[in-house]
Image 1: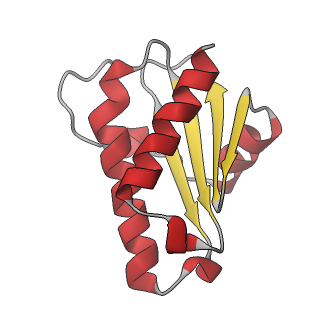
Image 2 (image 1 turned 180 degrees about the vertical axis):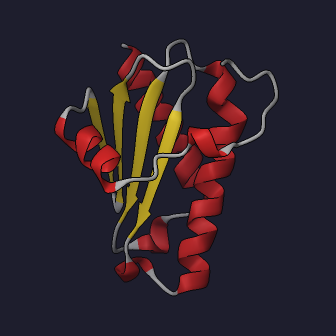
Length: 117
């Protein structure tokens, strides 16, 4: 079920805690940069999926939601460029004064390049 449009649909989201735990347990790549951790796991579905965790220590609710919107937008815009399908988990912790859209986008594509090497 390869999607041709750039929409971010429900089936592309990691929803349950068991899915999050599976990625953390069986990761193929773990990328750390400041308060951001990105976990990537190759999977056999026809589409990539993303999960986002932003801890309360990251800031107020409006800022945590803004980070989630940024991550979804980065994923939505770049998902058709993936060579193979994977599950990606973003975890943002304390120290978010460094986190902005540019930082997230650069970190995401750096992690993907390291994964493909």
